[in-house]
Amino acid sequence: RRFSRARITSGIFSDPESAFDDEERSRRFRRLFALPDDVLRNAWVICAVTIVLGILFLFMDLGRPERVLALLTHPNLSAITVGAYALLLALVCAGAFCVLALMDRYTLGARGIYALAALCIPVGLTVILYTGILLTQAPSVLIWMTPLVPVLFSLSALSCGIAVVMLGAAFANTRQVFTSVLFRLGDIDTVLIASELLALAVWLVWGSFTPGPDPSAKA
Image (cartoon, rainbow, N blue to C red):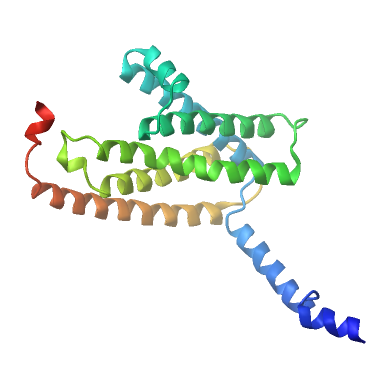
């Protein structure tokens, strides 16, 4: 009697109905954004290709690839260094998901997939933010020195992520009905675009009251 009372008072056994309700709510939430495997497979391939193209464009913009190698081999704590490593990790994560999606014989199991997805979250957020933060550190362009620049980059990146999923859905070969999920993603994208336009308007108004370049930056 003491043992059963201790178990009940310590909360080891929860209410079965409550546990069932929690599980049902979890299933409903997952169904809100459940997509067929073909859509996710296409989306991961498109994601990996766009990351590769982005890295190539950065190489072209630098003009000297040895600068990137020096940045990776002799890193220092800066936005561009953190961004470079985040891009590489993002490419590794996207490549891993591409391999898992395209080749059925390779699997990590549920825990491995969740671990890889958990790694993608901070890596993706870093890739989203680092360019905007890097621009805010440019002393010669005062209009960039505002937190609105990282906000604009973040909203644009999230909207582009939804566009990648939409593009993956356009080439999906599946009979599973998932139009409701696409409509939900479209609604979220609408909110993101509207927020981006609002942030852009605020940024332009703020920039109209911003003085010219810092003379010390020209020296």
